[in-house]
Amino acid sequence: MMDKDFIKLTVPCRPDYVGVVRLTTSSIGSKIDFNIEEIEDIKVAIAEACINAMGKSESLNIEYELCKDKLIMFVENVTEKIDSSRKDAKEKELGILIIRSLMDEVEFTDEGIKMIKKTEDGIDG
Image (cartoon, rainbow, N blue to C red):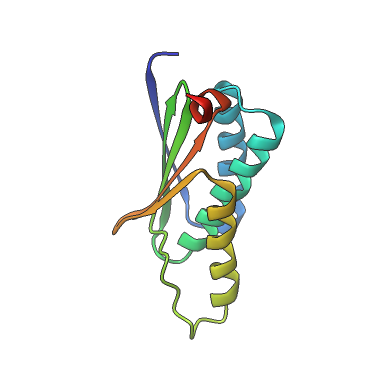
């Protein structure tokens, strides 16, 4: 692997494609040598981000930046502020808490969410 590799994934913005995103993310995580527990955490976080983005666009756009010591993921149309009048507001709020608990760094921008998971080398170094 070079110093950094970039992967962009675009799938239809429908719940039945979240599994495709999870599988892709799993493969990417194993390429960076995350252990099985870390890969499961990353898969849960990316799925929660995708669920948060549902209904905001026709497609889910995800970018992965593979570094030797971390994985950076960006998902468009994910928001931290949840409309409390939505019937799924509590579920989306819980999703944000789950993402924050599983990832090493989480940053919201106007475009979406940036999530970083560091390898053991990245945490120690």
